[in-house]
Length: 189
Image (tube, rainbow, N blue to C red; front, top):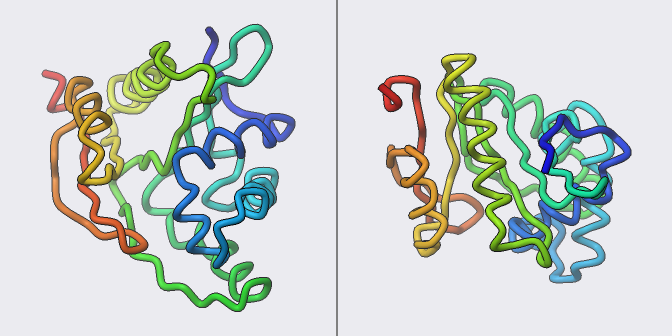
């Protein structure tokens, strides 16, 4: 398996992977539980530049020349600018003026979401994507890497803690109770 920076051509596969992890959030954004509409919404943004879900902010896991997983991350200080096009689109196209809590902040490279194709789950691809980001951002660049996990998602939290993430605080995101976890260079010493 290879992990590489995503390209615009990867957008359909990235959208499919990310939707696995954020379908309920996208449904809240667009006001319908229609998965085709949710994928179209996500595909629109993944294929564009300068937004929260852009391929520019993604890494992909590739096996046999096929994307099997994708992870989306960006500098937390850019959240407001990256989110602005999404909020504008929601207002214009869905008449939705949703207020979304800030899930990250300056000083953190934020893992917004990631997913592994359903038929590829259980092979450690998600762990490998996370380890890749830890190596790149925490070990090499000496930055803090953070994410949110649903409080009820015990299995995911267990994985993150095993990889060295530590609980920081509790947050709410689009009505979901979340826990913020981070891994910092100091945690690796």
